[in-house]
Length: 75
Image 1 (tube, rainbow, N blue to C red):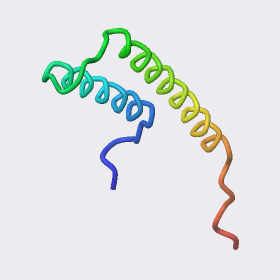
Image 2: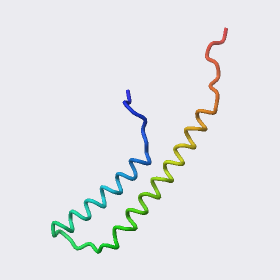
Image 3: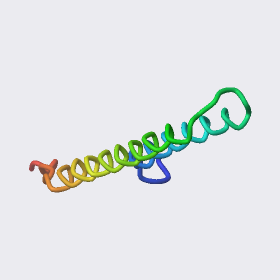
């Protein structure tokens, strides 16, 4: 049983922001060199993709809620 509603847009946004944090952590730790302008498209692209996934999910859920279920009690 789920405790809350699944929100795939937040999952996508969190994934992209986590990847951004890992990139900055690797740069700060000296594992690699990351120019500052590399992360901007990653964050903006992730947020745009998360917004698109959220809108798509909302449309799918509204379509599913608008379709009436057939009655199951046939007497």
